[in-house]
Length: 367
Ligand SMILES: Nc1nc2c(c(=O)[nH]1)N[C@H]1C(S)=C(S)[C@@H](COP(=O)(O)O)O[C@H]1N2
Ligand SMILES: [Mo]
Image (cartoon, rainbow, N blue to C red):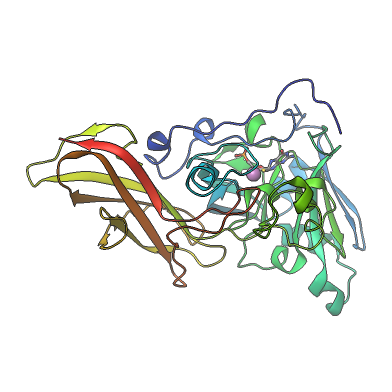
């Protein structure tokens, strides 16, 4: 496998800082890379559209910006490994980067719909074939740690759905993309694991099967519990589906673990966090907080922001009456529009993906 000249950039922001703004500024958004950032020239870069299409296209950034309707979407983007640290420490050791709760961003993205671009090229598959088909996104600009290129795919039906709002993003929060977040162009697939949001996009292929890239076939899958090491996992990679829709989730950003907080005149402390809907089932409609390990819950207040929609996160806050003491613990539980709610703990899996047990903060002191 390719040896990279240096380690790819992987980092998450401070959780309290992250959850303090509805839109995540580009320099506060987590970075997840399996490769070194390619430095592409936006004036010469092209996205090729090929595979099962009548007319293969080669689109410049100018074509994407001026020859197609531009669409805005505000959505959460999260690594499927967000909260892996909780799975690893609360259940059992897993393989993967030790993300805590901040491998997520919530940004406004703008660009043409994948649907419009594919329709311009003309899909040649018949109705039956379309049901099984995928749209593969790729970046061949630079090698990755486990493959010579980066790629992912989503079902063609999703790419063609107006409701799914899959776009080719040229802008993040009304600015051109930054190099780290995919300049000049990336895919945004709301509700879907970040791994499918291919950065530095250079190819879109309509094909009859999933992308065969390593990160689609041998990573980002919820393996069965008896896959306990790389060897026992090997027989499952070919049969378990890739992670697509992410599960409902929430996390507590305030109080901060290890901190000391003072109660107000009513004996309450401030509790805050973010909540994420599952897949297509947003928005989050309820967040509850518990100071007794989930015996009793009290409802938090959800904030409202301009531009929010079913794919965006909900920031929430509440005041909770708690006794003074140390070694205290709180948990949070989100429920979305469709009624999906977080379990106390979610299932262990070797790669530590899709953890969505109750949000937790432990070990803080109240004076
Ligand atoms: N070309 C390319 N696209 C990529 C990746 C990558 O390594 N290379 N990482 C993916 C993963 S795993 C995630 S979680 C998101 C992270 O996006 P961000 O770094 O903009 O937050 O990008 C995805 N797109
Ligand atoms: Mo990821």
